Length: 436
Image 1 (cartoon, rainbow, N blue to C red):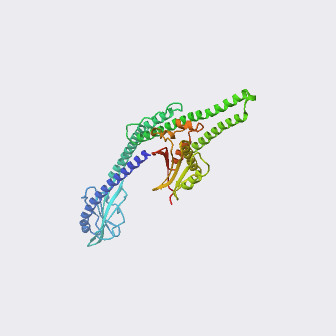
Image 2 (image 1 turned 30 degrees about the vertical axis):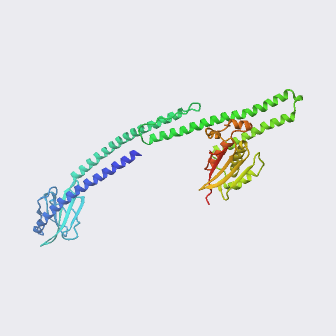
Image 3 (image 1 turned 90 degrees about the vertical axis):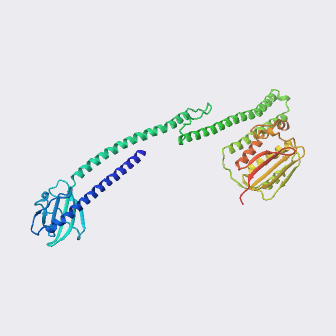
């Protein structure tokens, strides 16, 4: 494409240059022809109606001269046209007007540039013609166009070589990046591509690729850690379930099978909870767009608190009209996780409040327990991470409740964090209010 553009520009430049030269040549011919015609007008007035006078050329190049009457009879001519008919039958429309034309004249090897003018004489109207052969110009034009054609071809070839070299030089870093990307394998740490020092679009591309590789590496690391955590969490209840069944089968007649079944059912419930949480996290991680609808957080909080009895009283203080656009089932899961977490750590009371702050809906769940140490406020949102107190209070937890709640909040364009509290823990969910 670049070679085509260069060739087009060169051809356009050659054409413009040729037209400029041609215009200059014809302007010169026209000026010299006008001089020759002006000098012929005096001769035309002296030529009689029957004379075949000889005209002497005076203007450079214009040596083909004729004086012709209205009948087309040549009354006077220069030596080069002696005894020949009129060079042209065309004549100017009126006195003091000139006619220029280029045509072939019998006996002349090249085309002739003719300037004609009509003159009033005592013997009637006369037309004077001054002509200049264009052999030199045509030869020069042919040579000129041929030379320019060769020059254009040479320049196009040089431009093609230059463009090809530039493209290869520009593509060399891209080829290197392609080879480096191809060398990255699944079993090795994700490397980075070489960033050229050119500071152009190619270097920006390399930096973008490295940023993408960095995000991909972090994603792979999270996936590996997640798989390891899942394997560990699933192995524990499966191992316990298998051990209980193996012990019971060693002496089946001595076992209390209802007790064994209840223990196995407890481990199965834990497995079911882990798998359910994993499915929710997988959907959130895949970025699936779930159907949303207006949800009143105050109404949701009151309904969820009154759904079942809890170990400690739960107080609800919810403002009216705090509506968000969300997936109701996921928001119910968030509220349930927050309430279960608060109930697990509360000493005597759990408080739930819902209100609006500007264009943000705020749901707070607070307890009067021992609280969450400041250094652990981020850790509680790690997958499968459980604080020592949580393990002591509830050994059957999955460690996924708060991480799922935070991911649901992020998927809804909000946040979930542990806030400061005078006593106990206070978790704050913030979501965008629905546009009215």
